[in-house]
Image (tube, rainbow, N blue to C red; front, side, top):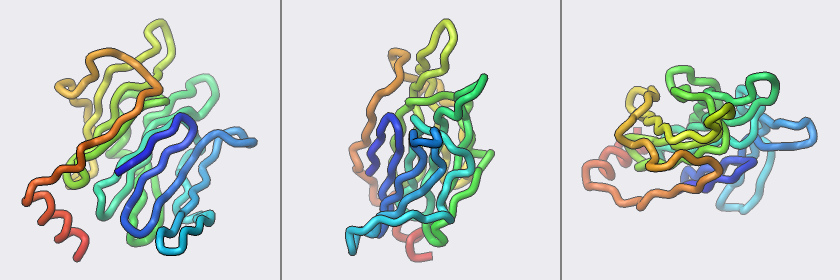
Length: 183
């Protein structure tokens, strides 16, 4: 489903895997690499570059049409980002999507999705006197919008955490995913 690292973020979408952002010599990267599963090769893909260079970000996808990269550290006086980028799998292009921005700017957060209807972003580092977050945001794939979802908040504020989902889908979700893939 997805793998999250502290300095880079990745997601899987059927034929290709994308690796974006991270900490580099510049020091923050917006570069996207695309791995083609059939050939097991990776190359830079400029059309999928992030809109903003950052590291310690999170990502998730709807499993069929879009991948989302959110949050991260951008450096400077206010280093934490709420920016959301959306990668369209059909065109392999990425652009900022303000309607999906996080409700709270943060880095080193976790994310996962149900693969069909919702993506979740939880926790993270926000700095200040209380540096850890327990905030959960929910992205609704049908509307490509994100909002805080207090019922999904973490039980303990923390950052640098890992996440995963069980991957189970109902028949309705599978039908919706197949329909979206065909169209």
